[in-house]
Length: 450
Image (cartoon, rainbow, N blue to C red):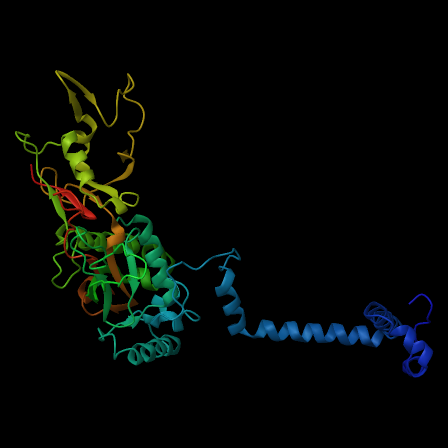
């Protein structure tokens, strides 16, 4: 304070506070009080080097305690740093309440996880690690039937799904429902017609003022999502486990997510619903567009595309995508719109003289996804117009892994098995009759066999 001397010791401080006039000047405002206290503290630190030494020693002691606390450092590393010190982010599929989340702190990489759970691992550390995982597995055994494997940490499971999502046709666009048990009921509106009501029974009336109201209510149905078991299996040379665990981690980070996305997509596409998901090609609500009169076998004409578009639910057009077998590309690229005795290509248009330039990946403004997982060209389902918002995926959010060195003992290989539990089913059971018009509408439209 400019008009008051700063006390040099505790006696001068007591004298300043004991003087009414001085105290009144010190406490006349919050700012003046703060300034007095700060100036006194600075003076004490300057005049007494012992205080600065105490602060330095205490800071060093606290920092040393942090360095010795491995658990704390690991939790900090899990939050925002990888081993190289680079920022990382958890996958958006990470669920802190998933069964495997309790394993994240100890096993954050595939190399650590398999080094601990590999059937050929030896030593106290490996046995302790297996014991810790087994405890969590056994505690969870009342809701997930035991397959003799170890629960996979959630941070690894969610990373598998993140990579798989980038390659998947269905999962990346479908409605994913977390499953807290092996069977989960999910509500649905039992809607079959919009002729006189909507949303399965909601009716609207124009009513005179003071007139009586007519009751109406939607009819609700229920879909049972029952987790099915998807097993990934591979045989890995024992040398990878014992000598090159880093190479194994790369394999797990790349090959397993690709395999997971592949087999999920196959089931979500044409699964029959028996011990596996029910694919959208087999949806009871799917509508099929008949071929044109005299249309050649295996061909695709513009009229097929236009009529398929017209059978999509109008509310779903903005989300719908075309899913086509890659073998359909020649037909799509050369299909023409007939105009009298002439015609012209309708998808690609006039190509450059040298054929350069990529074709458009949309038809009638909606994206085209080429895949080998739908029906072959010329058969029902080779070209589909689908709103995947009407497809449900039940995700159990728990994976297990097990290794065996005995099964392929003679080949010096380890058998690796990863189990995921998941289900998939269309959200509606029947096509919808429009308010006006005779053609039913659906979020699942396919072109019939030609």
